[in-house]
Length: 255
Image (cartoon, rainbow, N blue to C red; front, side, top):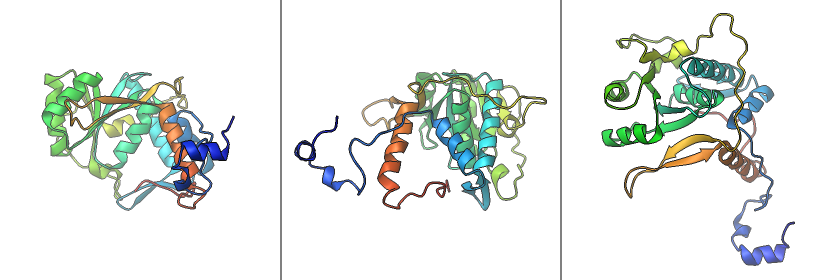
């Protein structure tokens, strides 16, 4: 039952500052983050989802890439509940890996490129991360590569910055590829004769992202964000911005 307007205004005097059309008790849909994206891809397959260095990715193309990434991660052992670290800058690798991990049923653990060595070691151990996705740039790969021997980290999935640029070709990074250092691009190659990707069953109340705090009061602490947390945050944002014309569904994209 909704409270009367007068009672609500008395108890919550900040409500008048809400944008027109926004209510404090708007219905919020809790669903899987991956379902939100798949629904968008089905609704706007040809619209641009992401732009990077002159290259545009449609929703359909991006959906297919994340499906293949999920399959590739599953081949490496990722399953529901597996924690996968993302140690990446703002490149397509992050978004492909983010949704790929979630589609495989895993949990995303964000690592900042600005993290000090002691912080990275703490996060790897505290979050039980055995697999991390990163880039071949010296500032990222060299640091994380050293943790293969000094922490619980077992596998690095490594991308190259230029493989998603306008040229679309990956350069020679000089990395000695083996079972512990896997090419990002190799995970995007579908296995011969593979059936269409079928995501595993995941509950909306399961953790989707482990987001660490800044550590201002000690060691960084992992905040557990569920699919329900994130999807209702999206629903709240839509309720606040669509009616005002700030957000246009199907016309927003990552840059």
